[in-house]
Amino acid sequence: MKILCIGGSAWDITLPVADYPKENKKYKINQVYECGGGCANNAAYLLASWGCDVHLLSIVGKDLNGTKIKKELHEIGVNIDYVYENDLPTATSYILNNQMNGSRTIITNKSLLTSSLICDINFRPDVIFCDGNYFDITKKILQDNPQSLKIIDAGSYQDETKTLAQYCDYIVCSNDFAKDYTNINFSYDNEEELSKVYDLIQKDYEGQLIITLEHAGSFTKIDHQSHLIPSISVHSLDSTGAGDIYHAAFTYFIMEHYDLLEAMRYANIAGALSVTKISSKKSMPKFEEVIKK
Image (tube, rainbow, N blue to C red; front, side, top):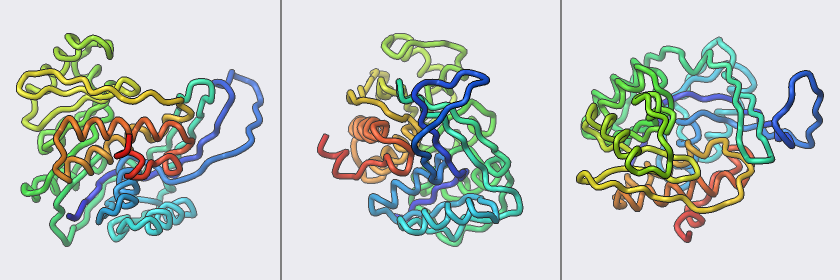
C-alpha cells in the first residue's frame, strides 16, 4: 500500500512556559524543542514510523530548516522525492506550550504553506491524505486517482478545504471547522447538538464525516445513529500535533480495514498519548502502545 500525504511543512520551535506569558515581561525557560511540523508532514512521519510506504508532497525552503525537515523525514523512512525546495524561507511555527494545562499557542509564518505547486506524481497511490494546502495540485491528484482511499484533515474553515472535501471518502474535521461551518457553538457533551451540526455538514458531502472533539474524543453517525467515541484520560503536557497524530492513526486503521468506530477509538488513543509528551515528533506513540490500550 503506497500512501501519498499532501500538505504543508514547517519548522516547529516549542517553548514550554510555566504559565501563559503576560505582556511586557521577561521569561526564562530550561529547554527548547525543535522539529518538523505541519499536518501532512506529521502524518507522513507517524505512518512511516508504523512501517508504511509513505511519500510526502510538500515545500520547504533552500535553508537550514528545510534541510533539517528533509533529513528528519528521510531518517524515519518517508520518501521525500516530492518535497520540493524554493527560494522562500521555510515556514516556521513558534509554539508557546503552557505547562499549567498543556495548551499551545502557535504563531506561524505561512509563506510556504500557501505556495502554489506544480508537479507530476509517477505512481498510483493507494491512499491519499491531504490537509487542504496546495489546492490546485491536491485537487488534480484527487481527481486523477478515483481508485485511491482519500482522507482530508479539514482543520480550518476555508473554501479550498470545503472543495477538496468533496473528493474525499473521509472528511475528518476539527470542532472549529464544524462550528464555523454551521455557526453553532456546540457543546462536546450535548449529543443532540452534535447530531444537528453533523447533519448540517454531512448533507453537503458524500464521504463519511468525523468530527474531532479534542479531549472528548470524536463523533460520527452511521445509518443515522450517533456515535460519540470517548478518548482516554491522560495528564496533558503539550497538545501540539495531537490532531495530526489522530488523523495519521485514523488513516492507518481505515487503510488496514478496521471498523470505523474501532479506527476512531484507536485514533483517539494515539492523539491522547501524544499530549503526555512535549513537541509533535517526540510525542508520537508507537503502534504497540496504541493497540494495547
